[in-house]
Length: 110
Image (tube, rainbow, N blue to C red; front, side):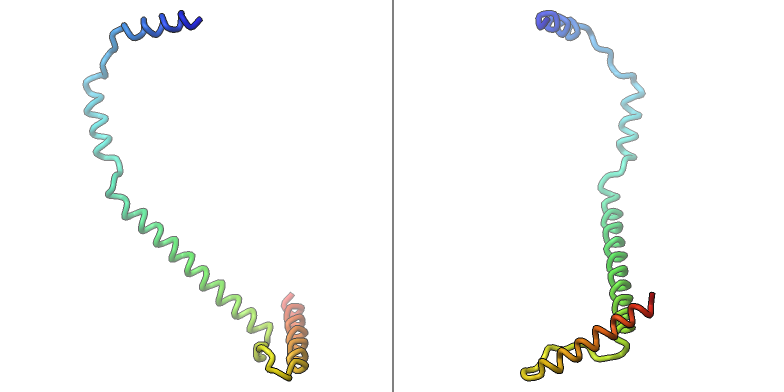
């Protein structure tokens, strides 16, 4: 079987090959000259910059929406701060009141 394949390959190699038609070279070279090259790399950079700008705008928008939501939940009260030494009980009371207010705010918006 391998011997037959070898003979077929040798026969195919010995056959003369037909060259391409004369107009094909001109057509290929014209298409290669018109194909996009390094001239369009600035467009790719511009696309990346616009995507980055869109993501940044989206991030800012989401941040503002979350800040507004948190402000509505807190309802103008001061944020919880770290407890000072000796005021752990006051801190826990303030935290509990804040959690209740936030829970009420979430139930009001639903």
